[in-house]
Length: 84
Image: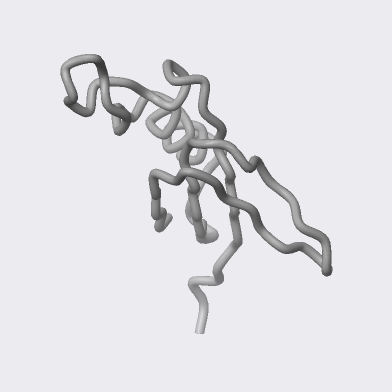
């Protein structure tokens, strides 16, 4: 599994000519899973994403999660084949 997480002020994705996704502050998460990846692997990654402390706290440090700041998550996934 490969994954990229970005902290965003707004994000959206176009699907079949229509725009979708949260427009508020939060995280954009793009993930590609392979044949060997399990539901447990995906659940672990999502759990980590929700708990990532990438937003500033009162002290100016990255000490708050997307959940703590009331942000949104835009999740874009795809499957990739590991075959030839």
